[in-house]
Length: 231
Image (cartoon, rainbow, N blue to C red; front, side, top):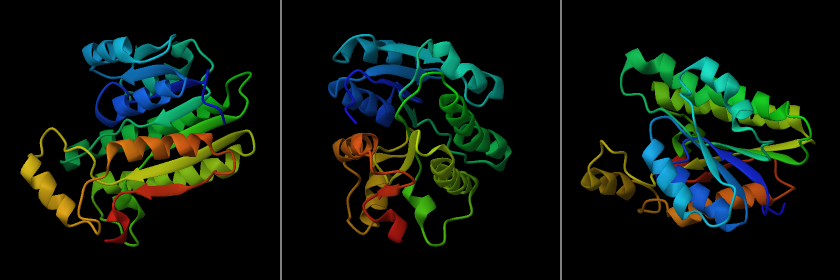
């Protein structure tokens, strides 16, 4: 698939990995719709730096089912490529329901909306997972459980939507440290990976572009995690 001229909706697209994805798709000639929850200033700033034209941004709280249900319609575009990148990392059992809503229910709702668009041809969905979810025996924490569930849904929707829509998943390992994690601890975590270094952000973006371009790939869960899924 040639990405030039395609409309790409990236959830959580204003900062961090999402922003790098927006830049990568824009460099490939795509038109970007950046979804954000609270990062309005970052989204507007990113819009000013993206190459190409006709980019825009849209706000929605994916922890709210009603906002998720209207997101694609509110873009005002026929979306060619949906990138479910937004996620919620839960650290407290009290937030488990929000975690599952953001990490599973809302992206599933977006996939359903995406498939129902009139005039959609050769659609692509790319779901961001987590290398930890592809382990032979995943951890039992709420966040990883949500990523495991979403991985299963990715494969199920690939079967359900073929041949009209391709659905793939990409499972990163440690790329950028969370805002609450010190750089030193991030370095320690990276040293425990088989390849002993964090995931290269450029390589992650290039792999995402490949999964969207490759018309022979669907139902793929591809770890880009420096071997995290092996541990």
